[in-house]
Image: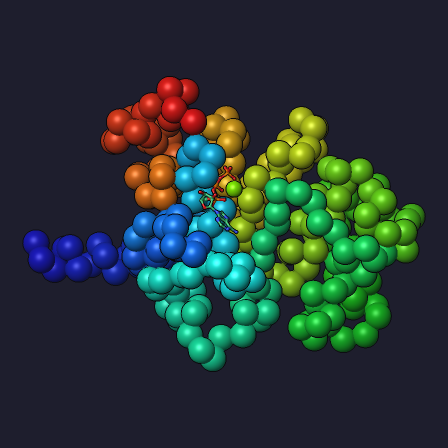
Length: 265
Ligand SMILES: Nc1ncnc2c1ncn2[C@@H]1O[C@H](COP(=O)(O)OP(=O)(O)OP(=O)(O)O)[C@@H](O)[C@H]1O
Ligand SMILES: [Mg+2]
């Protein structure tokens, strides 16, 4: 019996790409995240859901150390990527963010040509040799982000001149150009129309064949459509984590039930 339990635990941790243990975040003296422990599994989409202000973005930002850039934020606990502590002194956050990429709610292309937006990461990380290889990588990334056909004749125009939905797909192309191992997406579709949303959702489904994806969403339909695992947050606590189907049909906690049935949120 004991052996069985050990075995089970080993299997679970093997599939964990990221492991968070007792992660808390304070902004100044206010605690926004309380002792969150969860595994982010490889080659799956994990959805973070919960009412506004419950700490979803705060936790997401812990996973690639984006909170380092928030002066008042203090992160405690332990987060590992493939077993290695991402907050260890020797870890370079810039390198980490190439491995754990991020797409934000508001599209934020650089005020640079479309081509350079995508080439930026591979260039600074020295991932390609020569122009032909870079051209190929830029094209492949834009194709995977379902944007190539719309921009192939204007690669030298600024990324900021694209429509909102195109800008978001450009940001996705930029994030996947460095071949990340994990992609974090914070409400990536909230500024998009239904067609662009469907394109991004399809893309997310494709991306999970290659790496772990975490998506914060306010749309329960979206969480149900794109994710295999769901984590429900409430007032800084991770209340419940499990199979997406189970969370939406048979939640274990009354707070989850209230939220998914629209009573809180
Ligand atoms: N930079 C910051 N400085 C101070 N407090 C912050 C900061 N960012 C977030 N907070 C606070 O931390 C708590 C969690 O915020 P967070 O943005 O993580 O919530 P969220 O679940 O992503 O909400 P939403 O669904 O509205 O995006 C909130 O009370 C928020 O006001
Ligand atoms: Mg948020």
